[in-house]
Amino acid sequence: MFIDRARIYLKAGDGGDGVVRFRREKYIPAGGPAGGDGGRGGSIYFVVDEGMSTLMDFRYRRRFVAPSGEPGKSKNMAGRDGEDLEIRVPPGTLVKDDQTGEVLLDLTVPGSRVLVLPGGRGGLGNARFATPTRQAPAFAERGEPGPELWVQLELKLLADVGLVGYPNVGKSTLLSVVSAARPKIANYHFTTLQPNLGVVAVDEGTSFVLVDIPGLIEGAHAGVGLGMEFLRHVERTSLLLHIVDAAGVDGRDPVDDYHKINAELRLYRAELAERPQILVANKADLPGAQENLPRLEALAAREGLEFFVISAATAQGTTALMRRAGQLVRELKKAEPAPEVVQELVLPRKEPAPLEEFTVTEIDGEYVVEGEGLQRLMRRLDLNNREAVRHLQNVFARIGLYDTLAEMGVPAGATVRVGELEFEYME
Image 1: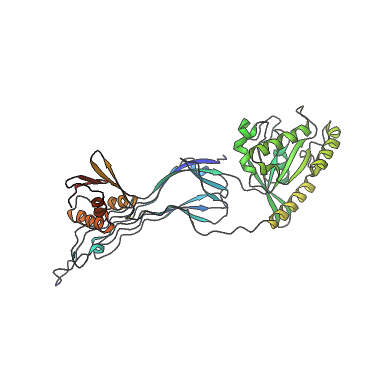
Image 2: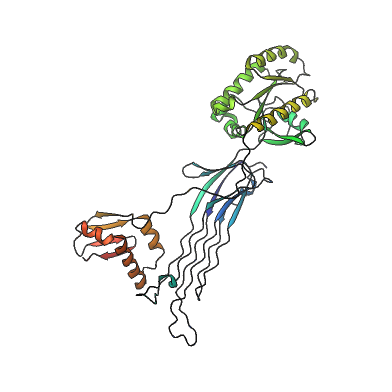
């Protein structure tokens, strides 16, 4: 089964907690603090795997949670980091934010490894808080929770040549003749309900990837006949083979078909209609084809397109068509810059705000202090631990919170709230 969309949940591992420990060794009665730091939580990576061609693996597994870091240990030993989690996706996968629809990543180069969610930072052990005036700290930090994210995966097939045209014009038959692909073929509309890929071997050592796009119809750019589901698969192709039914088997005019399909390409994305095309008149072996061939040849001349006459059913003209398509693909690829294999790339993200960036707002006689950096720090501290609260008060003094409250004229005894912490202000 071909699956080209998936929605998955990602969560990086939580950081391990720092611990409170003291040296307890013979002949060392006051060994001092020795609590180690917690380990970093496992990070989540996307890895582009050339061996994958669909998002089938995500049909039944939709939650990916990286392991958490271990708590710190005694003797200043840090906890073990959580193991990183690698999620393998096929080349051509778009990663979108599920809430905003923003494209976060476009994964096209095989071998690329992209960090999506970094693991939570491990908490600091009590040994980290020792100072000349606080020689035996009895508190440590909690580990930071790992970030989480719902994302949409969308696959746009990576193929060199795309087959476009109305339903039942012979695209699937052509793919089956020139490659080892075996798409479903029958004499009715919409036989092909999913894109099919095939590798066309032109000469020894020379090949290209051909994709059969399910038949497009008028209104495809707006989703009619699942057109939008299929049109995105031609976005990455270098060359289009525009197949028309020269015999007009279904009673349609092949010249009109050509104009309508190009109009749909243009309405979906303007540059698609400007992509290099070869006009291919198929079913030349059937009655009625000879009447339309001169009109189609004249159309190709007006449009500045190369023109081929074939019969996919009998393989007439298909070898010459594939040779020319392969030659054009090579020429187009030479003109493109070589893709760079990215071994590791970090998804851009906002840097955490510093502690000094905060605001104080009066709400119903209370003073509420808000700041991303402060909230981040307070989540790591146990506010039931008196020493941890005293440490936090020292931080408030260092970043100028008390000075700010004094400048605002906050009266003595007023309630000040910083996250979950609430205290009475005293000058």
